[in-house]
Image 1: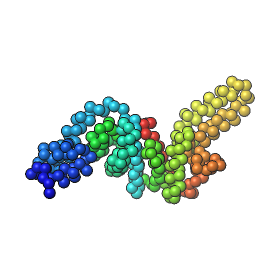
Image 2: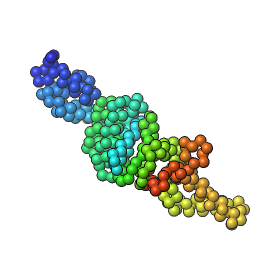
Image 3: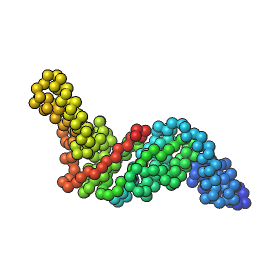
Image 4: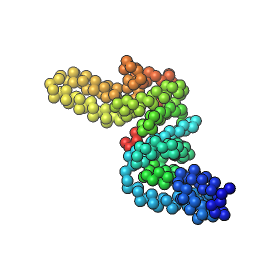
Length: 272
């Protein structure tokens, strides 16, 4: 076996390169500085190169990818951002998003704050790609069952939490709807819309109808119609399912009896 130094071999250098994605010379230097200790060399590289990468954090990171992991009655959705679409499509970046989603799954339910493990994964991406990468956001949800959909480019995704049982195909279809429908749903149904929002829409419609000379009775019907239209356009269960070409099937009709949507989360890269 070819020996680079007495305390490590060329095979060790290659192994460190494969693990970190860094150049041979950097890996050789790290092993030399750490007396051939692989774990110490990896940390040496991280510390050495992280300082260099910290200077690049002011660069905009508008590209990225979304990842979702479901494990039994727990699920997590995360977004990792970087500077270029080229890096966002890189296999290493895609794998890192999955690892970050797995890390988020170990945290408490609710919005995900970057843990030490997540920070370490992000640092690795920044070091190996030379780009400014950042953990943008995440959410962990517990309880019930889940459906999910991540668009093929990783830039749009939805996570759906239900109570009850529905086929995976149905849940995936609903998640695709959440991602693709324009306008996107902002609530599950009318009960999920703030009362002040409904009151505002009704009041504005009523006032406009009266100002146009409509009798009170007609104005009231117009206002109610405005509210119905708003709910149909913006609430998930009342929207017309995008995969139905007739445009006459509301999403709520897809769900088996007894199934309740508890929550949905929709992410688009770069749009909070």
